[in-house]
Image 1: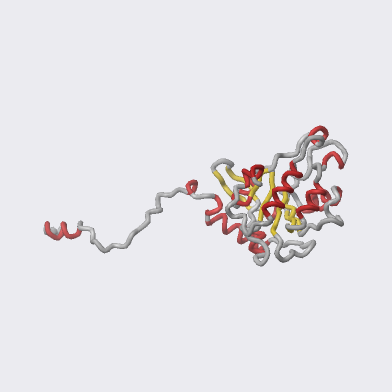
Image 2: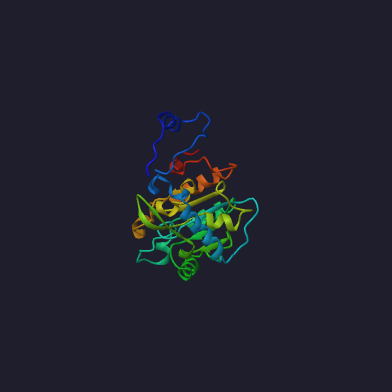
Length: 239
């Protein structure tokens, strides 16, 4: 049985009321349109790392210090070098760490396994130094996998793993991470500074002064209350 509807009832049904609430249409937004650091599935991965990853603290975080997170390969030394240990080491590394330690707690984060990190830091004289201390190491197991349009599927160093474990010390306003690969701070692009990679150590060690300049930058910005509005891509222009 079919029932007809009066024309005036149809017209009334098609009339939009004036008092409807505003509605934001976000159903058409594709995942690729959402910034990597804002995607819920990646935030959940950070939460799992915070819950499951165990950190071995070497030296307790210091109250009031900002945080410097350092990559190893091509940042602190040339891991492809065939030379001696002194050649592998990036020039002025110990001087750099000594100077910045006055203002920053230092964390080493490498996309390798923990045993390799511990051995390498011992060989390079970083593990036990009278002039500075390393707060702790993080390895590849602390990283999270993400998908980004420009990189595809990659592992990245999400600083939220540190922030959520030590909320009384570190946050997005007092943390900076150095890495020669920009994809390693996809989850925290505002906090990342891409350093020039240290390669061909047997020749470049005579001209590489990256750490000298970076130590001046870190010392200068340490006076700021927050790093939140800094553009680290322009660090060489900062005075």
